[in-house]
Image (tube, rainbow, N blue to C red; front, side):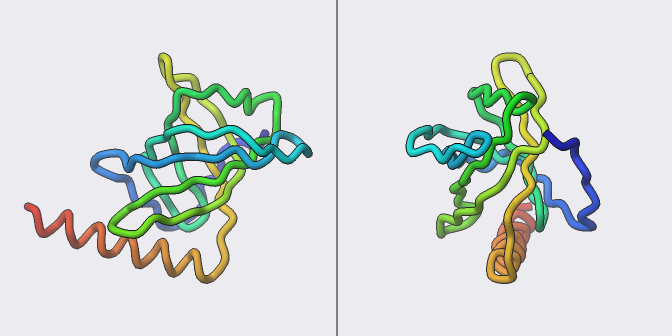
Length: 124
């Protein structure tokens, strides 16, 4: 497992966590066809995210790849990523993810976060 390397110049921290789901894709080199659960996304950048879930992936012992499904505004978005760190937080676990992003995903993240931020500013 790699330690966090937060070098993204942009990271958006949500006022309230964004609810979502995960699907387990791979443990070490084994592809997995089961393993679903709920998550909360705390923040997101172009290449990373921080999530909370009650599932202990034992990421300090295994290489874990997830697919996360979140709805920031109106349309669900799916992004795959690797867990880079795990922190126990009571009965929950906080995970840092390195997201697998291409140009289309980067544009989608930018667009989604712009709309989200505008909506948040409009409520004040």
